Length: 405
Image (tube, rainbow, N blue to C red; front, side, top):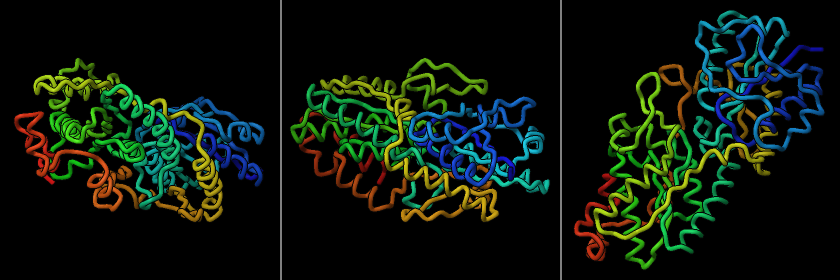
């Protein structure tokens, strides 16, 4: 046997994890390596008795196309002082394969530096996983899982839009995305939602809950002018990343708090917050519009990967072997639109704090311009006279003025 490779998955689930695990396992087993899967991510890597599983061909073949992860996942981020080489030495590890998003990649970057500094002969290759699509891959190349999650989000989203049309109501959807708006943007644009709100829009003004509410009302009034009584607004949860604790607490929601005194946003529905503030403002304006909150996120993470991600994840998994055979380490595997594999070195992707940079939605792209200027619906200066039929001061809901564009 040539040695062992070790695989772990960090962060949250995404469609295609098992496809990557299967593809990596098959190509290395074929070449005579032992393949070890580590449960609980980095939480277990440096413990005395880590929970592991030996992956054979039958196991790899069985999980290839199913959702979830055969390896239990964890968001644990070990401190540098926890790093040690015991497990690597004991199991003759030649390669550490990490599967995850920006936090997992950042930790992989630190581990790679640790191993390199100690001249320890273990390669480390990262596979970019996240439905948030926020790892700094070349423009147009998604993280794996994003396309499948977006497709499921669109399936659900189209049903929500049909419900809005059927019932004559509005829905306010909150979509996952960490600090980036890719998922909300992709789902909203594909569903032709009349309002899409992502943190990247606020590139000239501060993000506040009050501005988010005004943007949704801008769309509601515009649709009224057009004779359309229904609609859907989708808001990325990433907007909260750019708000202060005081701004978040101003929502009036009763939060629990973490050990650092910050509101625990994961325990509440963001859609409920958006919708509650919307209803309060609509009543103040005397607008009789029903709206309902919908949270979209967890139901997207463990679906079976679509054909797109099945192929993409297979290429990434097999690509790990190519990069390994090239003798490279401390890098992320990437596959361009033609299917060619190339490495992205983690040291080139980090910010000044050693953390892998977050890829945000590019607001000056043609795609963003077409969606925000030609697809979604909102009040502009040309609508002010017509809008006064519904509100006294329609200038307050002028889309361009709200964002200071």
